[in-house]
Image (tube, rainbow over all chains, first blue to last red; front, side):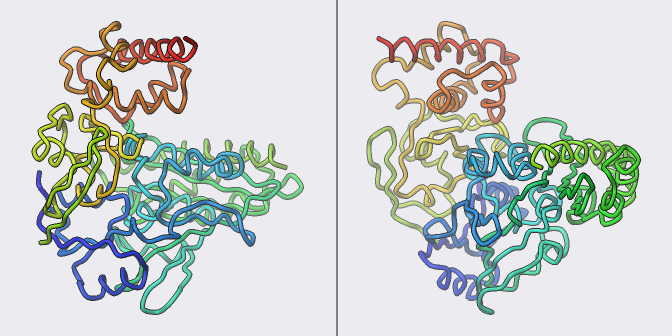
Length: 289
Length: 160
């Protein structure tokens, strides 16, 4: 399958990239291309132009700075997978990265693309909601920061304006007593989730002081399950709290019947995965205390 | 529609061509350069038959525009052995890590990159490492044995 024709640009700075996007309203940004190029080949996307980000310096990298884990939008999934910092201190992100697509895809796919493409089946959005991450963007309005909870406005839709480019991700730095987990149920390697659940917990003196719970592919966007978070906060992380959180997460899910299963089945999967993810997050948070 | 002059080093040899922006790397390799060892399987970023090494890392060349590979170093199966058989090719030969052979070029390139990073992988690490390359014949048993054999051969070569 041959994609439709387009004009290709590979600017070496963000201002030029933004200008090209504004000048070509049907243009798309090209990062790793592993969502966009298949869509173009199926003619589900027919951009008039592609603006490739690969030559713009400074968009890639992983470091802790100013109380945050800072990740450049063009950082490849495989870089996250190989990052000692991510693997040792950010278990939710580590779990999430290793179940995205397959190892060959992860060599080119980027975290920024996974977030900004805003496919409800993508895995990073739920992890970002659970982490209370924020996103940095650059464009005609200058530099702007968005909370993950404000970012996803619908399937394949974000609050980015025309000409605005996601440049980086900030996750609150991991501290003592924090831990997380991502539980994904997929039919086979490389598939989108039937359902998946991201949990991030902060313990204080043996009790849950903060909780983030978010769901993948059971709604029009990733869903933050506020009631599940509330069921965990203040608890000792015992079975009753986990059961209540699992029930609340299943209630927050809004899945559709499709070839991956019925809505009822997916809600049941969310219930089970929430329990497992919370249990694993708790164990990791206790280990980090 | 735009066309661009690109220069890509494939198996050590630099190739400069004028290409349309929408030309995919796999078509550039097969049709422009005639290197048909890189196969097209699913055409949808799933099967990995078109895997090449792009700057050393396995990539599905059906999901890369040739224009975006400008300046890159690419290794295809034709460049794997460098005259003789690479230990990975030797392993696939000895352990019969194939039946129809369609997935084999991509499977071997992914295996080479895996062994470069992890010279002594466990069976689970091998199965995980090749999970982006699909084989519909073998059930993977002999492929895993082939990668294990390649690992032995690479160790023997480096010891010797």
